[in-house]
Image (tube, rainbow, N blue to C red; front, side):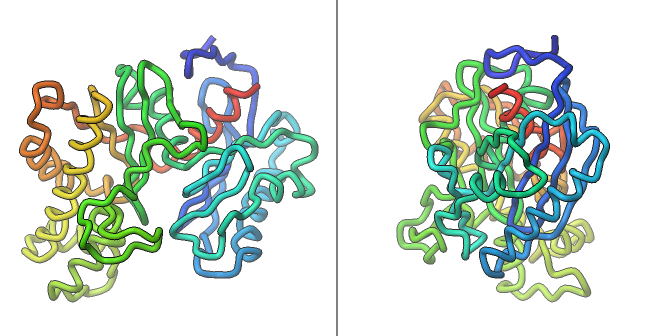
Length: 319
């Protein structure tokens, strides 16, 4: 048998389909019970388009899986979606996909012609990432960890007492929408001063441009990262501010639930020490209680595949 996931042993035999829906891309794959990604496909997320158009992209990703010979062996479909999600009702309301509000995602996936009678298991994308990293990645050695995705938005999942804890709705650990500044700018979620407005890749690029950075080409966080590596002080300051904001969120979470480790993945984490060095430095300033000092901060090990592998883990758990 493979590693234990959430206390439930997973045998190597099952194959499941998995879909990871984010604000920028929709990735899908076929994954076996050892966590091996056997096939992968990806499409862009038309995040600002109508609800039906966004789901059409999900259907395209499913079609890409259905063309593979192993599709017939897939016994379930795991879906990780940007949130909030409602695992009980099977609906999603992603902050960064504005026309999906209480969108019946599970129902729509079940209706897809290729789905057949396969069960569909829904979870938040960051919870899926936490499941993947706890199963096979950087969090596997820890019983209490916070796993964070810093990309278009900021999401997180919690591993407590050796188990991924999604909470009753599936949203536990939704770090991107804790408010760091009660008088801050309005967030699309309806609150103010949310961490996502300060630490996401979108925020890094926006902050750099507002401070006078003028990109030569790529105006995304990746472009800011390139400028920062070249020594641009405005770009470096944008990464530092994002890292400091994330450090505050991590320290608050550690004070609340008592953690051993923090695993950070997503597109912004691809900047490496450009992001991790200031993150660790600022965390030392904010995580000062006796039980929060010395938190281990690690990059995610599964890279851009963590969401797909995590969605598969959620489905395998239910088999």
